[in-house]
Length: 469
Image (tube, rainbow, N blue to C red; front, side):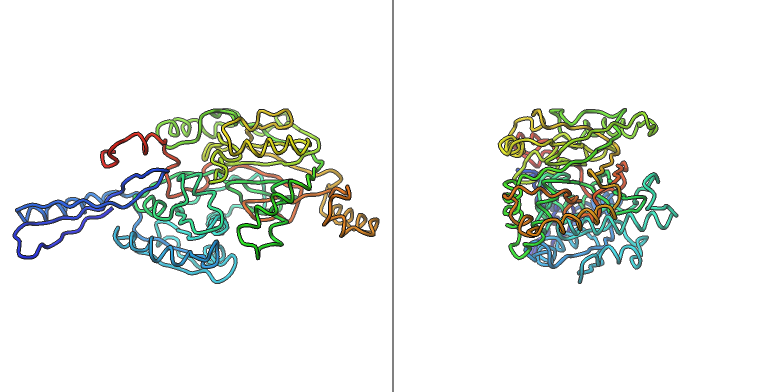
């Protein structure tokens, strides 16, 4: 990380302190220190100069970062975490920063779109949760496309990759992206990945409705169960993170299903399937996979496949979506940078069977080995709910339904009466989409993070001396 020369009082010896990264358990990194002493002070000075010269030659290490801090996310600890745990490490490594504390929703996104002088920085860092990260990618991707004249409203456009890497200092309610790319939501570990200059490409999904851009997604698109959980939890923000548990139980007991049509383009020319036992990990295996990505044939009409039915959940996972409560995630074998997303269709089934599916997210059992679950690795998909060809149709249906049911509000709040809503909402990385019929396309390696993917556990746990790595 850095080296400094220390003067020993009343001594003719030289002393150098070298700060370096030490691996710990559970994918955590720590800043360690080793001291070298020498009777020749001049030799010590040459050591320091040589190490500093070597550090300067590592071009992947950032020198100037633009940092956005969300002071309201999670437990409102973002500013404290950055100032006490991250800023000292950046200063020690000789990294200069421009820090902006956001004042309102989408402050970071809007600043990146219009005001930020991106050419002055080597990367952008967000201090917050997944919502803050979403702001950053929306600002950076939009800025990149506009600067190059790309029409983001056209779902068939090929988007240009962003040149700046993004760093995430986790400080939110959910830190899904950190878990999937680093293996932990520890802010010190993330800061050290930024300092050493790691780089991990990430796929991004663009979501459109009738040739109108809606949002980008990097982790989860969920309709049905996960959409309902988010919609219900938004009304209970006063509960804090506990609202997700409460809404999850409520929606499970409600057991709503939704009718619709899913069309998808299967991925071809890529390595692996959603039911592989292998996981997306850093190192040689990941590099071999990256050598075979994006080898797709043209999107012919004959390639599209269609599935119609009644679904409890429709999920698209562009990464494992692992978290402490679900160590494997929604799709354990999903890859970060192969230009695909894993489309998971959970058909209508009993509450008991759906519970079996949910519980397998926390166990070693194959969560897709159920008759009512199917999973496809795709590069694009579309969804149209039944009876909904346009948003105007959707609004008319809802109005007519409200007129027919005198006690419609009671029915919505007390689903035990047997009424089933016609439409759910899409959960797009923790944000509710305003449209139900959507067109989703995966853009291969559109952004890069200051990360290296999850390293194999053996790297951390089977080596007696971490310093030897």
